[in-house]
Amino acid sequence: SIPLGLYAGLGKASKMGALVKGGNYLELLKDIDTVVFDKTGTLTEGSFEVIEINGSDDLLMLGAYGESMSNHPIAKSVVKKYGQVIDQKRISDFKEVAGKGIEVKIDGKLYNLGNKSYIEGLGIQVQNPLTVGTVIHIVCQRKYLGNIVVADKIKDTTIEGIKRLKKEGIQNTVMLTGDRREVAKDIAKKIGIDTVYSELLPQDKVMQVENLINQGARLSFVGDGINDAPVLARADLGIAMGGVGSDAAIEAADIVLMNDDIITIGEAISISKKTNKVLK
Ligand code: ADP
Ligand code: MG
Image 1 (tube, rainbow, N blue to C red):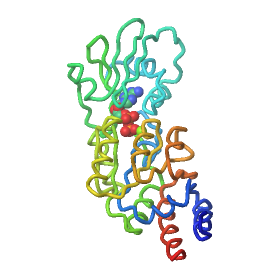
Image 2 (cartoon, rainbow, N blue to C red; image 1 turned 90 degrees about the vertical axis):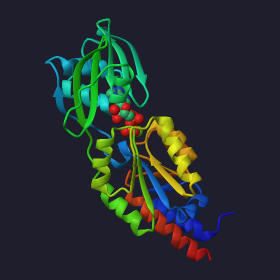
Image 3 (cartoon, rainbow, N blue to C red; image 1 turned 180 degrees about the horizontal axis):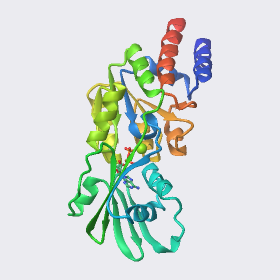
Image 4 (cartoon, rainbow, N blue to C red; image 1 turned 135 degrees about the vertical axis):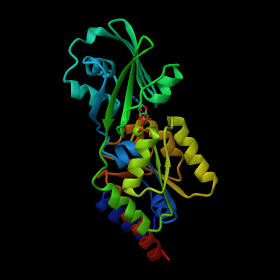
């Protein structure tokens, strides 16, 4: 049976917005020394906006048609900027390339849309815009057409949340992302994250978490996406966003932040420490 003090702690955590799925997870919180975050949707809003278009007049239309079958937040921002993709019949053979981009046919012609490493991996050279942002390079029948730059906003609560973790004694805050290095570094600097790993594929994120655990970290991972479920399961303590999070992430997590607010993690650590004192 669960000791009374632990019940009180779980109740307090839940009032602050942290749904802890068991007394053992509340106890574990006080021992965590490393908190690893997925960037998009966790530290940032996860809703991008188009900030630049580099190419001919029809590039945005092609981007929107190409991305219209993808659920990725990057894809949604391009479709939103264009307006509405009306003629769905023009699109066929859509394929998502996880952590890289998409492949699709528009009017029977083959298009590749995605990041630099994806396009260069196809043997096609890209043009890099000067603006700091996430870049969607667009290729038609192996010919480079141009790019669309999108950007995400840092959540209002992120900077405060990271500060609070430091106050609770967390030694290492880490950000993992599939996004490009320049964007990741810029965001990490603004929010005070200690360590950044960028341009990662979904499977690389699991590997980075395993590396840190092997180096002795007592590690919590915080994420929201479908691709985050394996990483949440691998961490000593998995924390998912309850509001914006995918069902797979919420299922795989040990703690769910009902308010999507990372400040709650610091508050829950503090409750964990106090609960432990009461028990002793
Ligand atoms: P994150 O780590 O931010 O969750 P993902 O793993 O989903 O990112 O994607 C990594 C990178 O792959 C993105 O930053 C983007 O450059 C590219 N990418 C993924 N999906 C798409 C898409 N539908 N269209 C264009 N680019 C994409
Ligand atoms: Mg993600």
